[in-house]
Length: 498
Image (tube, rainbow, N blue to C red):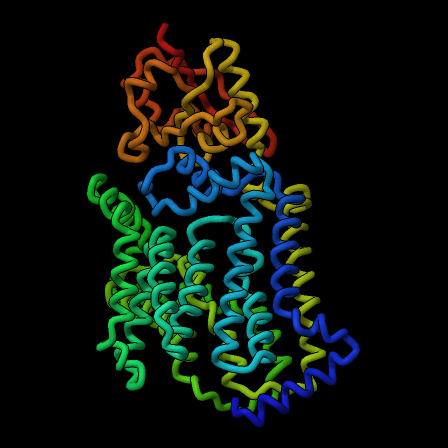
């Protein structure tokens, strides 16, 4: 927007909210973010009784304090282990972490927007961003995407601050944030490519390529990543093998196009609440001007293009949840691309509150009543606590030794270990594989014994169980046990050596 338009819209907002005490008007962004963090911690904690899969896996990895895992870098698991020490198995810890990540991302969006436009528009951009489903309904599982959502937004803020202010400390912050981003998820590289591309294509920003600050950021990032890079080399780059297996392989142009359209469609679906609410602000559509429009457009859409185009060319499809961070700055583009009609902001505020409450109610209703109404139970309904208590009791019936190891797939074994009454929690040996859990040693498992669990959907145990039985001849199969929600779990016990 031009300055005259900014003043006009800002005065309109002031008239609309003139009944609100001025001291509160100054804290609208903080109130919005606190509202988001509070309710998206409280509602999942109260209504969802079992931790999500990625959270349980993270607890299993964090218990070992490794520099990496076979799936991802370690930052998520470290943070979960810290919160687990404080909050135990309470959802306040892991749901609070997820809400805090999205809350900090909203703060970064607001701070970025205040550099590029006025405070009123920045607040509206933040409110629209909060309505993206990746910040609400799909944000409660604290995983590597949650962390990346926060760090992507922080990187955007640091990058914009570095370009506009030119301060060296902003470049240093950018290097630190990128290192943290790579410790969260390697997809952060897309953000780095996006920023590098802007430095190359924008004439005014190109001058930074002959200055030391960007290279200082690169050096700082590289130094902070050194321990993880050493771990990757030692363990033969395991996460990259996993990432390759997660790609959706397609054959032919048609299938590649379908895969790309599916990914793009998922991102548009996540934006639907923001699109609906944004219409209250800008309809009828009138163009607006902004001196930073090129940078805003690049922040909003370059990551989307950089994700989709290589995927289409290579035929390697993308999973929809990989798009979690790339929509973060789209609402900022929206409210700066079109003129905001100040007279409609009151209607927008009412609609935003309604949408906020509707999404919270939908989430709570699904967790509390979905299974009873005949819908498929979610993992939030899973009887993880009952399962852990049962197998702990089964173990104690056969030995007085502490339960040190739980062996199984990611879901069953992590549930049993996380909710186990044993303190400290048992170690998890996923599939009994050294490549998947390199911190576990076969000799120690033979010495300490283990509980082995698997989902008993078929009468015959999974192949990995047969492999485990052949390696550990003293293992005895136990009768299958059925829990709530028609969950049947098979098990075996390897008793400790005398």
